[in-house]
Image 1 (cartoon, rainbow, N blue to C red):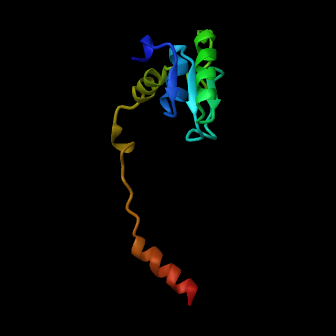
Image 2: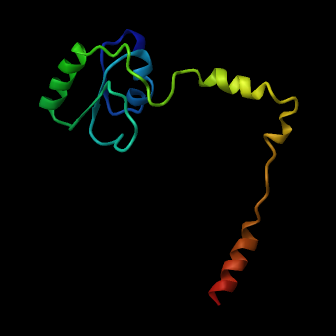
Image 3: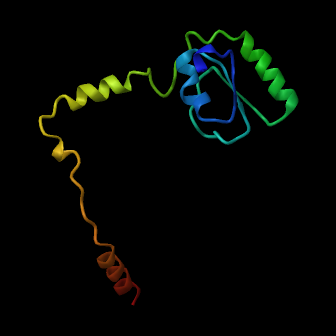
Length: 113
């Protein structure tokens, strides 16, 4: 769906993470995504009709085809596959460790005495 839209509008992380990779502008409404990295194609607005309409109009005129996605170039799966191909035995990657919380609790109780 993102490949056929003109502007992504809302407060979803997909507007920050995926839309830049598709070369689509995003109108990010409100502060739900506050503090997250965002590409130059993301327009941050308050939840105000006037600001949202203005940002949509601006987004429709933006050329986002050369925008750099701060979350990567979309090649993560290929890089992960290449890294995993270096291992003959995956068991070392999935070894679980046991942590006895009751021992930790007893140590804390001793410190509190």
